[in-house]
Image (cartoon, rainbow, N blue to C red):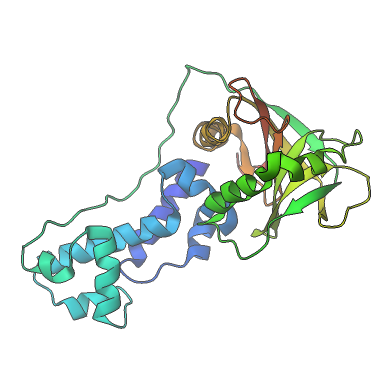
Length: 290
């Protein structure tokens, strides 16, 4: 059973549970990865979050039931909503019309199809990478505060970088000043993962220097990484590379995304240059039965 088959098994489970509640942990188990990594990779592969996909499929099935003449209150209860008002609000967000309008034929329903994953082989651009065994190392820098969810992590990370770049990037330069030759050398963005759960994001450097007031220090655990070079302005260049890694490289690599810390390595603060150099460090482990 390969990674693509596992993803399709997960989609089958979702269909079996709809229109009722879907256990995200069970979806991840059938996809043979942690819930953290499934929810992170899903938008790269599909352009939407896992939760949004489930909502779209649930409301597509609900629309079909309503168009067949079923009562709104019955369909709402079947979808797990205690009140028709809450159901109507969720339904309109997906369908752009109220349940009663679809039921009476006054509005057309939008059918969001079930997803099926396939391997798309592309030979136009080679993906070069190297495997690195990296011992645990210490990082010091600016860490995010507040509650993050996987659905909001991308948006909040972008906002966090914008915050750090204020005042001519003073806080980024403060972190860069702590570099002392420790590896990996460069400005790092580290997404920490603790037993398959998102555990914070830090922008800083690998260093043995004391942690200044106003910064935080964390330990990045030892891991095996697949390292990919990236050239181009941020954040678009890295987002395109991450999509290719997950959609093209990972399915046929013989590896799976490990529940370790993800690393972005940046060559400096001038991230909008056309020839800007960065790297993606993806924690990996050998896939069982690969």
